Image (tube, rainbow, N blue to C red; front, side, top):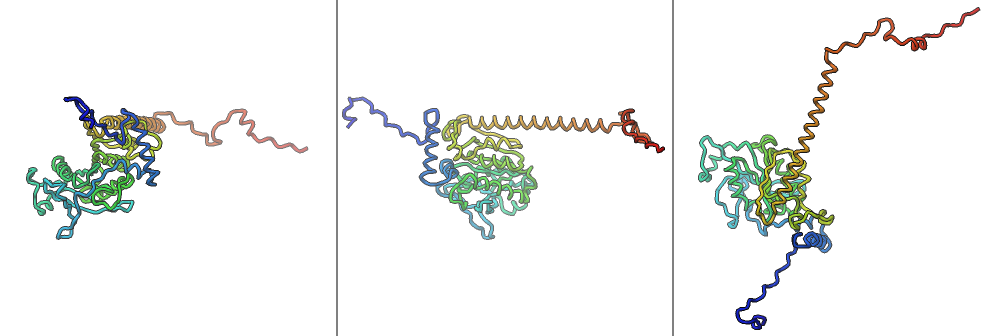
Length: 366
């Protein structure tokens, strides 16, 4: 063997390192490898560019960490598996929605229990009678989970958000994740999911208007949350670990070819430029999966959009002030009135015009 031929005390050479499927652009060949992989998916599997991009970007759990059961009263229940865990028992309302694409997704609504006497966090295991007597919080947070997880794994986080922020939390299950009816996750399906959940929230008694709804996206969930902010009015938007696009995160390069752009998922920069609500960005500087440069690009896009919106508002204000001033000058009584026309023949004409308009004399007969 190779070890027997080496002298005593010598070290074995390190084993060859496996070459990653998608290397970053800094190490060479990142965008080319990604474009080749996407073209191979489209050619061999006969799938559309959207399905090819979804196969690379989405990674749902192999099995759901929860299931939707029924209570003795007939209401739906959120039942967690043992792997997901539930540190805090909390009453939750469950409902099944049908999206515009005909897919069924579950939503889970947690009401913050506002009571006359404030209760502490250890007292969350309260009775159902006490919850019915509570009044929900005035604000509602629409939460969209990230990649490689489902709503069951985000339950404890949503309970902490509900209690610490004192807001109602509605968890949206994305198509292709958890117990949704979709066979695979697609970008168009997830965008329809958030719109359906937003419309459902507005129909509930605990939410009266869009000014009481906030949206929060986590990692991949920032794409649907950004799309919702560009299409519907919101009180605010929270993006945790945002990204500009899935292809840029996988390749680490800003050079995106036409083939990669056709298969790209969640290109958020054009959508965020149309966002007109306050945005909070949360990103770790040492994030190894989604680099902080993605969050910085999102911040720069939002600042440019805010500056353009400010200039447009200032321009519209100047135009309105100019029109108001012109209207005030026209109707001002300080200006001298126009000369009134004579009652006999209207306004006086010049001598040449008067001679031209005077009828010719009739010829005299001899």
